[in-house]
Amino acid sequence: MAQNPKRIFQKTKIPKPKRLTFELPKGTVDLEIGAGTGDFALAYAKQNPSRTLLSVEHTHERFRKFKNKWNQNKPDNLIPIHANAIGFTVHYLPPECLSRIFILYPNPYPKPSQQNNRWPNMPFMEFLIERLEPKGTLVLATNLDDYADLAKQRYIHTWNLDLVEEKALNQTSKELPLTLFEKKYRERGETCFHLTFQKK
Ligand SMILES: C[S@@+](CC[C@H](N)C(=O)[O-])C[C@H]1O[C@@H](n2cnc3c(N)ncnc32)[C@H](O)[C@@H]1O
Image 1 (cartoon, rainbow, N blue to C red):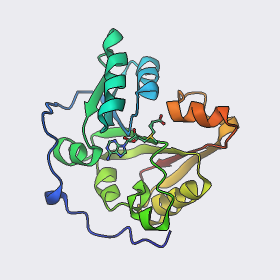
Image 2 (cartoon, rainbow, N blue to C red):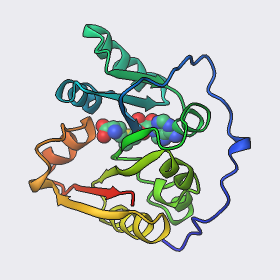
Image 3 (cartoon, rainbow, N blue to C red):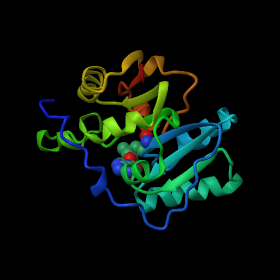
């Protein structure tokens, strides 16, 4: 945890995603970072027809699976985006354009040498949270208790958000669909944490 999240975020050094055409949709817009194979995204879009979800995944294989599922009925309130989420956010999202941000089961980066790669430790967080409208929320889910502790520490004390909801797996919010990783963790009987933070 002893990383310095106040390292400076150098947005001018972030490359623009290649071969991406994107226009911000009108209305209420949410962002999912690290969509994987899109299970959460597809179910969330169906449950929330009045909102649009931008769902970003950077690996080819996972995005291909996501896009194949999306192609089955092409919900127009779900925009699958094949890009690095940092580059996408920097180059395409204006301040205060997002209502909700989801970071669901991010890569764990468990080693001490990898701590700077955990989302709550990244200087990019300040830029990302600026994209959130006032009272907008950020949901982080993880099966790792030290990642959940880190998230609480950073989002409250470094990034100045309020923790408005905290749930463990067996109480998991009925409103939120499961991700592929959450299904796997639940089958193994692991505890999962859902933390909801709100911008002031
Ligand atoms: C552990 S997986 C979880 C996937 C999905 N959220 C789930 O719970 O089933 C984390 C995902 O985040 C994606 N990811 C990590 N860093 C990313 C980035 N900078 N931009 C876009 N996707 C990213 C990875 O490729 C991976 O698919």
